[in-house]
Image 1 (cartoon, rainbow, N blue to C red):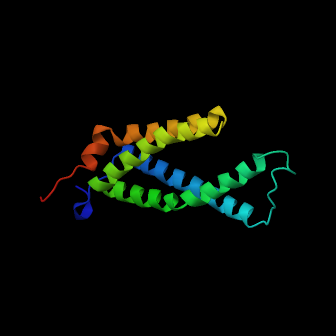
Image 2: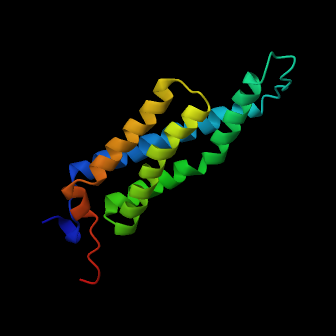
Image 3: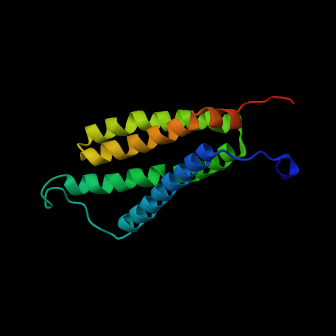
Amino acid sequence: MPARGRRSVPMQVRIAVAGFNAAGGVIFTLALTALGVLLSGMQIDPVAQGGTGYLDFVLFFNAVLFVSPLAAVLVFLGTRVRRGEHWAWLASLVFWAFIGATIPLLAWLLEAPLSFRLVPVLCAAAVLALLLTPQARTHCADLGDY
């Protein structure tokens, strides 16, 4: 029996939490990059720059800054899932299902390359699969009042 009544964390949950942290790290890195691009003082003139491609580029970085708080939310949820909290497990299922559904739609609307469509969906599916294993469900079960 673990010390102080703590349960051991199943490997599936540990791997899923590593996925949470990796996704949070990627979002944080993109946010820092976006901040640097937007603070560099570039001028946006779609007519002189041959179309709206550059404007789309800048709008992408604005969107990345908008979702940058998700990095902190992901790390927070990962920590709570690792502790076995049921509400965090449910919120994580909803979050990863939302990501798996909306990223392909956004990539299709923005005509992004195939890899931009597949990689986030496959990562979200992998984390969802790990969170739905019997070991992870048991670890995060709502035990109520003992």
